[in-house]
Image (cartoon, rainbow, N blue to C red; front, side, top):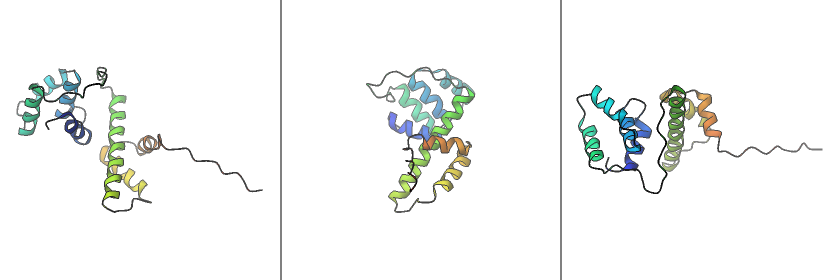
Amino acid sequence: MQNYDELKFAWLFQGGPGTFLDAIMQAVEGDKTALETYRAAHSNLTEDEQGVLVAFSLGKLKRPRGRPPLCPVKRGAHFVMAEKVERAAKFVTTLKRELKGLGHSVRGRHDQIIDAVATKFDVSRTQLAQRLNEGSKPRRERKPRS
């Protein structure tokens, strides 16, 4: 991972609270305590983790310019669950987009995909379904025939 977009993508699908990707993401955002804690707890880093750490220390991993600085990241239980639901929702939309790109029909399989992803990410199915339906247009009520 040599740039912020690759780091963000990897963090979205592989990272989570307490992982190396989460610690490096917080460090890029400005809070280096999680990275220091992770390095103290895990003395043997893999080659990939060492490469990301070197890229960060050389200043190659930076947030894109023009965006406001992020507030300090809080890691309470409610925030962690919301983060997991958000990650699962993005995974569902990405998965459906890739399936459509491969020529597979996702029509009628929405519930199956939500169930599988909710199980994989260990989130509530109802919370995931609500998050996916937040941006959709409300259905129009039909007038009764007279």
